[in-house]
Image (cartoon, rainbow, N blue to C red; front, side, top):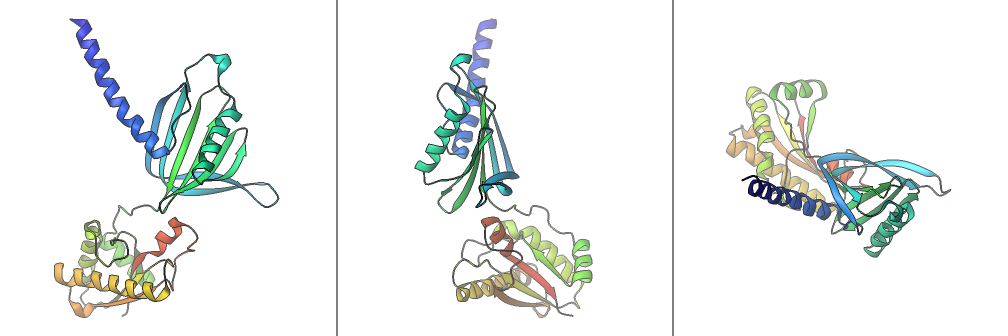
Length: 276
């Protein structure tokens, strides 16, 4: 009676293990080296990764990127004496990266750093080993964090009182459109709650974009997005239209630089500005 139970347990375990393994390698973007086994796969929706590059003099420079994080750990299955060297592990990934249009950022005996592009998304990869044949690969898909926590009405009141404006990064639109996504509902509800509680307040709803595309296009898009927010507040949440004025400034008032995707995401926002 024991043997069938153990057999079923083993099959169940393998099924559970196989799916994370497939997902992990898909996120990493590269298959493991021969004669290795995936022992652990760690995923985080949003994390920071230290990235090393070289300056013009060849000195090591530390920086960081943020986004979706995947770490795969691999174990050597062969004889100890035949384990791959650090150089062999790094060269394999360097060649794979270059073959896929990637760029080597930094390489040393203790670690390899490179980046590559898949579609419009930037990936940063760190490969490290300690000479034991074991190694790990970290892949970070650059992205900004979704603002999951909405302001409360009390927080909004305090910020509007002290600063006269508040930026919303959790108001989402379809790409290149002024169509609000359902994920914007929490932000819309708390804005409506604040405005209804302060019916004497008048505000500008200001759309902002990054600098991708022409200035004229972004000016138009930002104004259309502001109008969409105003329409949502007046029609769905029954905020008085006299309280709201939509405006769009496109890329003219960035919150930060537009050098990376994460910084461009911070510039794509909606700002509520007090007018009285």
